[in-house]
Image 1: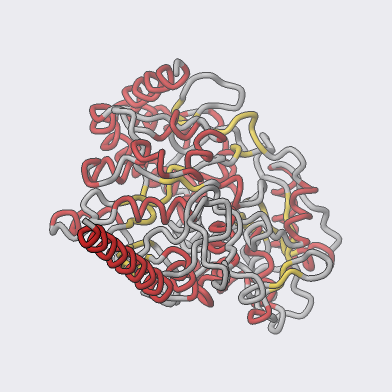
Image 2: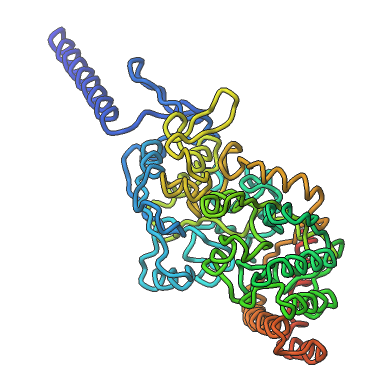
Length: 536
């Protein structure tokens, strides 16, 4: 009996020693192959007392690393041509924190939908797809993408975003109630006042010309500039035919479907009296040589060739974010070159409110073998920790917090600080991956000129932003060809009227053409969707 007891005891001791040895080996292996768990609010496993804990800040409840074993993910998005890919500082730091190595490639064509269609057809869609929208996903096939709302239990940060922005589910889910895109939080990234009129302030000051406000004052100022500089084109353009989209708003209308300021129904703008008045005004400027003769076709190269001359162009509509970079480009060639924001041209004096959230962002392929890992990686970028990484990088590595609280980027001193420079240098702020920004980020670090625009345009917007509705598949298939045909006609007609090759006197023929193309059917579809939107 005593011998049998001793044998049992010996077996138990052997099993205990083996178990302890296995635990010790596993622990050593984990320390060698896995980065330490975040010290943020992620509820991760505790670390050995002699192992330093890396604190990546507030992860919003998401545990880091996302996976214990290193994995590779493929992604595609729209990037600056000079962005370092497939890896850069951003992806390397992201891999360090999450254990997910993201290999990013950029779209090769200017039409991501077409390119993605080929990837879908060849069953080679990457794990993560940037620059997506509800419309794009509808065209490619919703079954090719992951319904985000079905995974909210593992997405603490985006779940909070949805709670704080209920219009996302109201506006962007499909007819089956699914959401396929992590959305771009524009109100957290871009300053409230983004676009407006911009002037050569040095030229206005030189000739004592007051900053114009409204169409009559603009006309007189442009006419005066033309008299002073006969070979110039005072009003120039960066956007080509799309300029009617920007100008029409300050006339109180739009170049396609819209809800008027204070209105409660969708209307079709290009047949309105306000749109007609805008065309008449621009045609007058064109006829008198007050605007660039290539106004409706001008793009970046043409624009730069005019604005970066001493006396070729003086007024344009654009993003206030370009003021500093344009001034930096022109300073050496044009002493005293200075740009300042101005009032809107049209009699309305305001434009549509910027959307708080855009139908644009990043999605996950339903064919990915690592769906949950890809979803969690994107969710991390919505956390305070992740949004700092994607927009600013790492403190004391890419950026510094100065004693006065301002942010500096030591390696970029002497350059016009903007999203492009940060993307080229570090891979930060890439389209698709930047959907939420650290409030201190460069996109919100307003320059003195930005502050000048904010002070000048105290109340720049219509009462409400334009509602964003979801449409049924039947509605989409019906409205899409109508919208495409109408938009093409609007650009063609607007160009002809402004350039004087078609008379505005035959306005009724223009209205009838829109009727023939089906604008009323479009109005009916939009208002049916609007009724569903309001009843949610």
